[in-house]
Amino acid sequence: MKLAQLNIAKAKYPLDAPEIKEFVDNLDKVNAIAENSDGFVWRLKDESGDATNIQLFDDPSIIVNMSIWDSVDDLKNFMFRTHHKDFMRRKSEWFYRLTEANYVLWWIEDGEIPTPQHAVSRLDHLREHGETPYAFSFKSRFTPDDLLLLDRADQLAKETQASFIMLSTAADNLKAQNLYEKNHYEKDSEFFTYLKHC
Image (tube, rainbow, N blue to C red; front, side, top):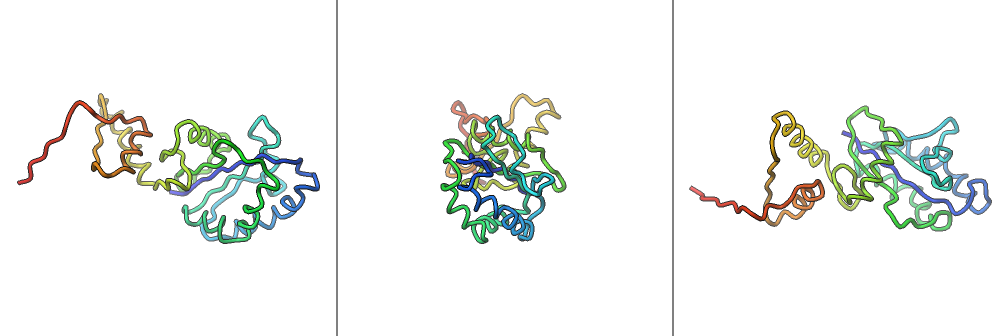
């Protein structure tokens, strides 16, 4: 599986304004670095070579960036270990700080290219439900296995017309507990499990 990402930014100035010229003038350079980075697969762009003219929101000052990578580490290496990091440090000069999540990560099948509209739905899901394998941030780093486990459980339940799905995990496995609860599993408070080791 591959890692897809969408991030958005709300510009303080029109893109042809002198105050944001340095950012705009370096887009081609930074995009070229991305395309030549290890693990890069694809990025959203129009005929001009970037995505700044692609409007996915009612607010025309919101610009988008969307790409696909082999792994979380490949994306992070591009973001924080190339010339890209210099522009991230200066983003407050050109962009407003958003009060909601401004980026989202999710896993996709090899060869899949999600639509921009689908990417926005993932961002909306993260904002509404928090971190899940369906839509997450660098804070969680869910793996494809996390997604496949829950997807397979859902699929098997539908195929067998099951009444419910029961998952269990260790009492100290807080990551799994958090994962289950964020995917609408409820902790059972009526029954206890007893084990006898032989």
